[in-house]
Image 1 (spheres, helix red, strand yellow):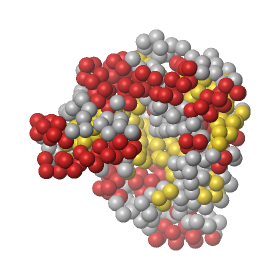
Image 2 (cartoon, protein in one colour):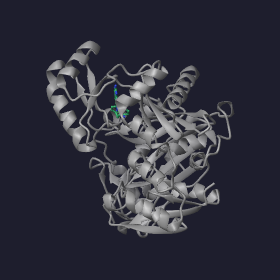
Image 3 (cartoon, protein in one colour):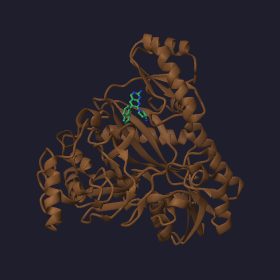
Length: 495
Ligand code: MV4
């Protein structure tokens, strides 16, 4: 096992990785940029190295500086977290060249699965169900027209180097193809330096269901069940839960087996996620892509399976065999994650950086808050403004949901605008309660959302009166407000 690990990331995920390292008795090295000198991940680490200026190319994306920091501090392994360099094959290669262990899959696997058409070829060979579509990249609108003719409209143009929706275009009829092709290829070229695209049949109102997998370097592969991540806006997940209300035991087992087959076919080692789209009727599922990193939403899997995914990533990277088999794994209870951001849900979720004048985290049974900030910290404008991931666990979906609403209502953030009030209303909404969580959930049910004026007035009164406790929670559908939500609504005010 290693003695020291460098964490090439910031915020809540860097803190999360350090917690497992500490439990394992491993030293931790933080890296940081100028604006992060007082960030929580720096305070939590045993050692910290300043990389340079705020812009990612000078700090968290700077491969040479990060490798140098590892050498300088004697770290033997690098955990990339998510985002930044987590799925960068060049970084994984540079680590190996420098004699450092990259905690993640091999550069070859990162690269192969990073190409969406290459990934589809691998999955087709492995018998994993694919969304009908192309297996070869192109930039030629005539090729797309011929393929679309064959599979029928509507189709989606997707970037080969993409993922996460960038460079994606829906095409409803042949007349729209040329223009859509030109703009998709242009966007892909700009975003990924690769203008190649391919076509998939456009599924109507599906769900996003993904499977967590773990693979060791001895050929053992297991899955840790699913996460339902359909509640997204602009391809950013907002709320995730497990188990998915839409899976039967049979479909769950089939999807888990397909994910294990996918990992084996790719020669995967480490923690990974195989994404699927689940048909609106919940009966068929199709491979979407593989994420070759630890995901933001990994805590809900940890709470329901009892597995520390970060510890296993480190152990697998050190050559250990998985300490359990598939038959040892089961889902216990229900977990929900809400991503808490410094952003303004009334202004198109525009980032709201600034100093956290008050930051009080919710507590209680079944509540976990993976947080990257503290009271007094100034959330910089230079990075993704995530504050924390609030996760609740309960015996049932309803218990986890009630715990989440209470936790959100007791999350006190003053000084920046946050998504807490919005999340509370999502969790209390009729369609969420009914499990109608399809990929169009937010635009369909929450377009033009506004913080209710009642909430703000009650919040002001409660705040003035020093009233912070809160016993009631909306148990039925509708807005969670109506019961005072003083702190979370005050969080929407810039003092
Ligand atoms: C799709 C799709 C429908 N049909 N592919 C969006 C991001 C990227 N990961 C894949 N995405 C989609 N791919 C086919 N063939 C619909 C989406 C999609 C979506 C997927 C998951 C969660 C939210 C979404 C919102 C809009 C579109």
